[in-house]
Length: 156
Image 1: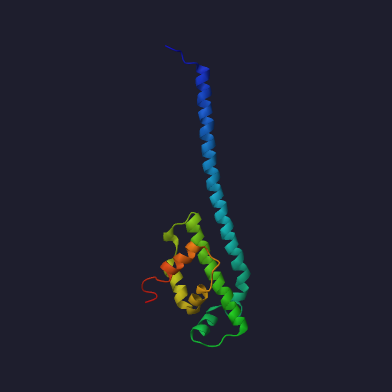
Image 2: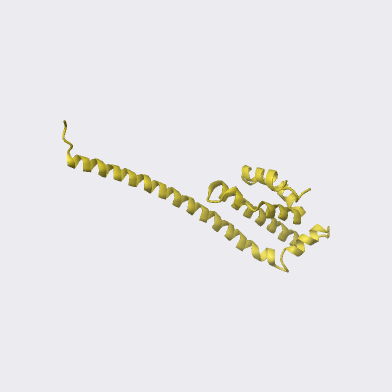
């Protein structure tokens, strides 16, 4: 029978502990990277929103312009511009939330589909504007087209 060397056993256990520590560190770094990416995407959306808010909220907000467009009144150049900026901001915010589902900590149940569909319903021009957009993630485009724009009870 061979005698177990106490020093060798301690060395093996120490090496296993180091390996376990490295695995744990890799796991923590991955989680931290996901969190930083999520924060970066959120900061990007917040920056876009802040830059666009003065355009959207100037002269009484955007509701008056959406209403005017819904009833077919002619929009001024400034109103058209405000509406375009608003629509871009809405879609960018939707895309950001979708990316958090696709790459981040959110799940598909976190997507407020009914509210998104309602936004398209309340601004019919947004649907036409959406059809002209091609710079988005194909999965996001498919989600909007197949889930949001076909939401039961909204577009029937």
